[in-house]
Image (cartoon, rainbow, N blue to C red):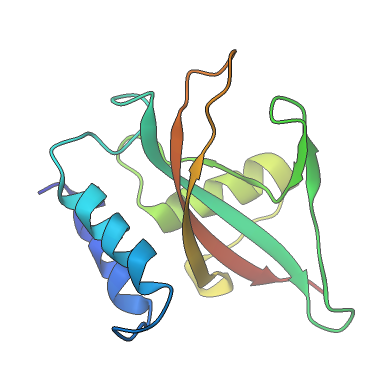
Length: 139
């Protein structure tokens, strides 16, 4: 089991769900995907891989901040693919620096939620993204 597999399983343990919770299905899907023999990052599996999303949140104004993604032609929060030898939290910190020019630490990020999204399209290599969502509070 790789370090990334272990990190992802730790994240699943942080998500509090009960057997009747609707989120239990996504947690079980993540666990099955993590434990599969399929590679987890885009460099090794360009069709089906893990990503991080970071949601800048202003608690006072109760607003989140989004950017227009040219390739997706959609308004989404910053984020991106987990790279080789990165943990999800390291990916989130890197993406914050690359996309927002903000230096964050793991203490600034709060695990928010998980989702799996079909991102396939006629001009896209990626087909499935397994998103780990982090929240960080901005001033």
